[in-house]
Image (cartoon, rainbow, N blue to C red; front, side):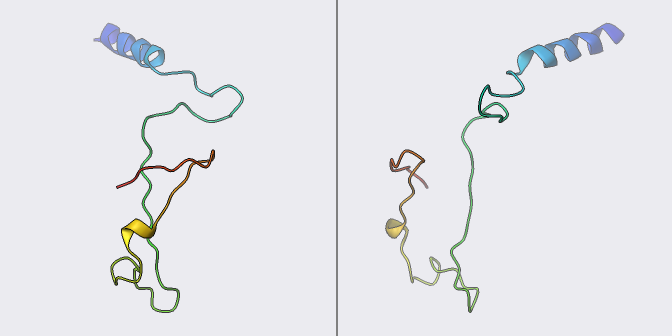
Length: 72
C-alpha cells in the first residue's frame, strides 16, 4: 500500500508543467478561461442585457493585441 502512495506522489510531481512560466511569473496555463460578468444600472441594479437596454451584438471584446475575441 505504501508503494502505491509513493508511486502516485511521484506521478503527480511529474505530470504537471513547470510551476512558474518563465518571464511571466504566472502558473501554467490550465486551458480556456471562464469569465462571467454582468452589466448593471448603477441606480437600479438591473441587468442592462436582461431589460433590453443593450443587446448581445453590441458587446465587443478584444484581447491585448486588439484582436476580436469570440464569446458565448
